[in-house]
Amino acid sequence: MTTHLPTTSREIRLTAVPDGLPDTRHLTVTETPLPSPGPGQVLVRNQHFLVFPGLRTLIGGEVDGVPLPALRAGDTLFGPAVGAVVAAPADSPLRPGDQVSHLLGWREYALVPATECAALDGALPDPAAYLAQGSSGYGALTRLAEISPGDTVLVTGAAGAVGTLAGQIARLLGAGRVIGSTGSPEKAERLVRELGYDAVLLRGAAPFAEQLTEAAPDGIDVLLDTVGGEQLVAALGAARQGARFALVGALSGQLSADRRGGSAPVEIDAFRLVVRGISLGGYSGADHPEVEGEWVERFAEWLRAGEITFPHDRIAGIERAPEALEGLIKGRHFGAVVVEL
Image 1 (cartoon, rainbow, N blue to C red):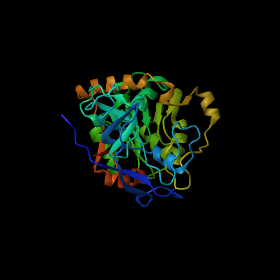
Image 2 (image 1 turned 90 degrees about the vertical axis):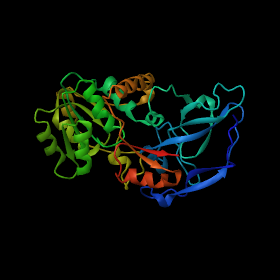
Image 3 (image 1 turned 120 degrees about the vertical axis):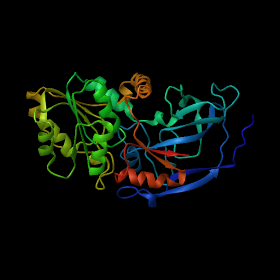
Image 4 (image 1 turned 60 degrees about the horizontal axis):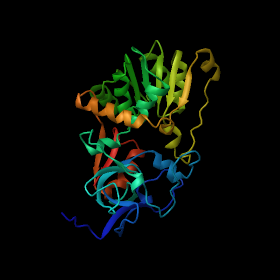
């Protein structure tokens, strides 16, 4: 059956690099001619793409050590996406109708090198679930900060795309008590009611260290940190002997209006690290290439068993993508933010 394609495609472009945090004023919906695949390329009709905090770093231009290029005025945004192949050369291993993931989101139709597409295996019940940000949390909690049965685990930024999954993962891996942090009372209530957090600390409600002492009077064994800043300092103060800390993000600096998205300075007590035998490391998926496939397999099993959920907000229509990014930066969403086309 022949697929009738439009002659144009819409995409989201950066109109100007902001001095502070990006918002809808800095993004525009642009209509472009529909591209045709050349040798080694496929044309994908995007169905969902992810709105993620890392765009702040790419827009800010501080990309030293980041395996993605900076975004400049006039560039089309990009990021994780899933969609269906609609056109491919005859010699391509991908055929029309194949479901794939790739990194050219933020557009309705993406012209992608076939080697940069991953065919979806259908293990997950919803294609959007392939955009779940659980791989980093799973990898960090199995490679850097391995959980022992009964551990007390702190997940900072628990209402975000990583945190909403990381708390559930920690429990499934054997944690005895799971504590989270967020900046919203409403989100805190959802984390306890929907995702099984035992306690949630509210940023700004009281000194974070005091809240943590009350929630974990005997200290914590594991930290899964997406925030940094005051929360990382407090976690060090509450660490038990032999605690394991895994850092997967630094939103306190990344989403600061006073920075460019590529730094998050924090003063920590090195003496405490030594005397308590605390391990502290940053998690990078590139260092553990086997984790992604392992995560998808376990995620699928847990979903089928009803043991995990994929918290996310779906935003309908590419024209609302700029609004979705602004909402993410301002903390309006719960879980991952996915634009549905």
